[in-house]
Image (cartoon, rainbow, N blue to C red):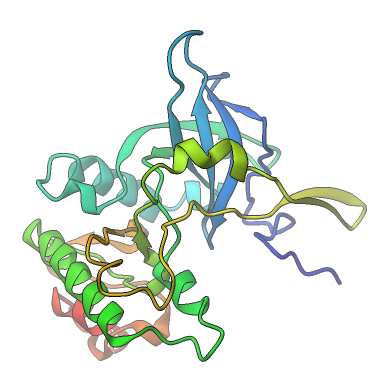
Length: 267
């Protein structure tokens, strides 16, 4: 049996099988390349098909699976992103520009248009082939920046609920748009499963310009964005968390009430 190297396009959760060059939202957006994927969505770099003579704008479009589109957590994530635009620390969260719905053979897919970001902290860590660790000065910098973002979220009376290295994003390297024409070399593969052909597109995250062993000077201006807000909830009585069990605090596993301290436990 073939194992997809990217999102499981044959899965009944219903991933949107996007392609470079494909138009979205009635032709307003044109897909350039795939940035990444997760359990509930895939994310694509796209350019706005502006009027000729006007500089085109590039954005990241997060396309949810059909199943995730119908899940209440997705509406909750979009609501928090809309609220975050009014926060003074809004640049520390994915910047929602607009949203729309696309259709596929699975059904409807919610699409969030976001400011593009670089790869995740997990990808930086795993790039170290010598044991997967990060130097202490890098860890301290990332921990300090991330804790400030968590504090700003708690100030708005919101629990993140799923703080992992995959959800801590590094800002894209300055000037990435100028390098885009040279860096867009799409890798694709058609995969047959049960008589159906699935067009697999391989991920190409935007560069953040860092190495796992970057110096103190190189990471001094590091910008962190905290994503993965699908598990986030407003503070209140009887809150339950539904993140992966192995990162949940004991009180969440036991079914007791949780508060801001749950995020610190996960982090």
